[in-house]
Length: 148
Ligand code: SF4
Image (spheres, rainbow, N blue to C red):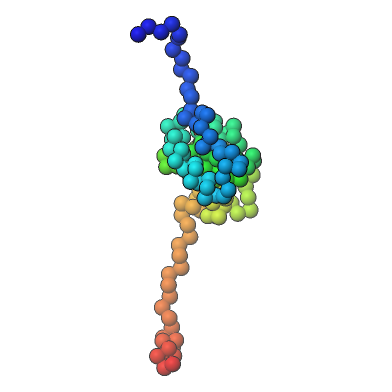
């Protein structure tokens, strides 16, 4: 079939005109509602080539965004869900180190605000401290327990 219009390479993301990516205030009442509404559309972000740009432009954390951007579900600017198949490299680099950087809590904070982990936090997460081995109760404690 002949078409007079030229082909274009314009890419329209799957979220275009889909209100479930950014549900209107008043359309949901709580975190559970938001999760229920948005989770089904999150896989549409996986093949999207603009995830990183989407997050950079939405600025979900500083703008306290509620909805889906870049394969993450945000509530009040915090990540409450991430779809399988997206990459941490979509996220912006971390800013100034926090006091808790270098710990698993620091790693979690990076995740919640939607930024890449800094190197010390990543190292802490990759090799968490070993749990203390359980010690055998002292022999005299056993004797007391039996006598009681
Ligand atoms: S990554 Fe952003 S632009 Fe792409 S589909 Fe998801 S919400 Fe839309």
